[in-house]
Length: 189
Image (cartoon, rainbow, N blue to C red; front, side, top):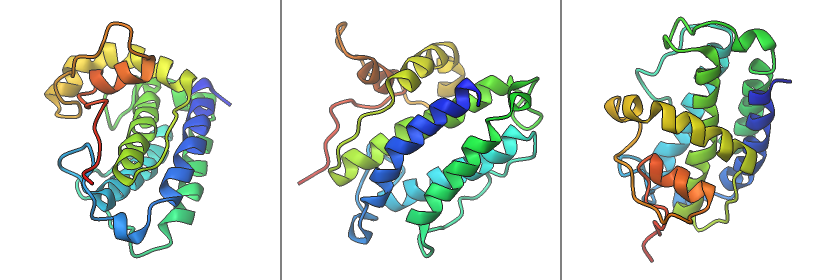
């Protein structure tokens, strides 16, 4: 296993109970990501998990349209797809060179998958009233990446503008703020 695959495993293990805890009635609930309802974000997370499997193998990824997995057994399928993501990033060769599809170093591409698998489960957890505690090691890895890629990610509209956090805020709160999330976001009602 690579460091990225280990961190992906830790993040998947935290994300899985969140996704399994989402009820069908919650799929239309709002999330901290203004453009996504819960169901939209589930579909987006699947798109990321599946596309980044191919990116680990230097295959083309298609982000042009988001597939709708909600009519399937997506809760069970999420576990299988994240297992495949982890397997794909377990090969040392997955971290070599530059991604032909993204034009970024392969380790950065792997961290991008880790970022989505760490942040979006938080979005889903707070939107559906579930607990969430990310992998501390993943958060520390991502803080470095977010500092390095912040300006480009904001330019690409991947991150929002940074949200200020207290100087003594914990690492995950700082990560949320650096990616443009409101750490204290709460669902209505």
